[in-house]
Length: 90
Length: 464
Image (tube, rainbow over all chains, first blue to last red; front, side, top):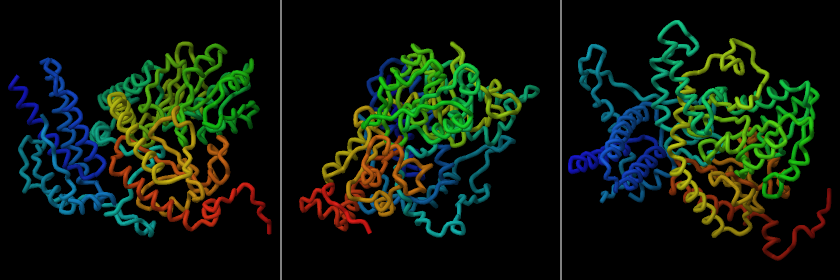
């Protein structure tokens, strides 16, 4: 199980790190919330088959996020008015 | 177990250059399998769009308004774009080309998408026809069925709160000699089943009632209508553009014969839609568009592979995410209504508050003119009704159909909450809305009279 544990933790860290790079406020917030939700929902999964299935899904999603972050950097535009308010708060 | 993560607001202002440098560090392989080092790649400038010569009054790009108009359209889900891009970049074959691999690969992609759409509504892939959107699907369904069976049956039933494209197709049918019944709706926006039953005649060919209303969000009793139509042997069409991917739909359990689906209302691309048309018992339509006979003759014209792949992917994601989205959207919707109701008196929710899709909230703020409120709420992208009629100052026909007073119909705002709406956005929109409603009411002499206890209905206004 320990091999799964380090794999899962590293995937979680990478998914969060990549999600934070979304240029778009909406996509960034959605991705962060969704990654947290999915990992929390599945934290008690112990079945090896189910675990490797989830890990595969997470790996695919990580690659997808990386590609879409680049697309967002190429074609994304500006910031929402709300981001400035949050910026002030810190 | 999971570490909490910091909020990312502080990073925003330095972001573009830094993030872009990070993007360029991604190592890519060129076609000779050599790793291209970042320094060898040309510096790429992000693409910015400048429309200042077309429109001079655009807001600053650094202060874009929040998007709360999910019924007009939804942003493309990045997962959907990721599925579509290969078909814009590499796989450009015509899916109807049978003589080479370019055609085979895109045909396979189209068929996969057909299955993804079918699975979402529990249909057979052979029952899905790709169109340019729900407007086209509605046109094909209504005109196509009516014209095909015109020698035997001449009567169509719809409701007064349908989308413009259904009502307009019915007008076109009336001009061709068909008889159309426009069913009224009750005060809550829902049709009366008894009235529907008594409206069905021996020569009724079809009933067309939308699943979720685009302006007030009410859900019609689709399963009951389906059962009634089956018992009366009448075709049942439903415009489910606002419902597919948001609420569970099953064409067999609900006895639906034809259904219209839109791509851009479920986080898919614009310009694509689908129509479900039952095979058993078979529903026939007369094609509207003449041409090469694609989509089994019902919709000629080359199927746009990238868009169709996007629609399919959006449907698959919608099926996966329906529970999560619904949970979030319901919570956000309640949050918005609670905030506004706590701060403001005399706010009316249009449409049934229970039998509705929570992502569409239509509120009337008494004594405030809707258009002035929309103008004041520049920071939030909202609408007073459907996008198709947003240019006119006339009150919405949907609100008039539910019997809203003229003044309340003029003071309505539709809040559209979607997959990508955040709690912060809802709070911001609610705060701004409360602030401006208070300000506009303070300016209103009518509001002042009501505060003084005058019953406005008792006043006899003199005419000049």
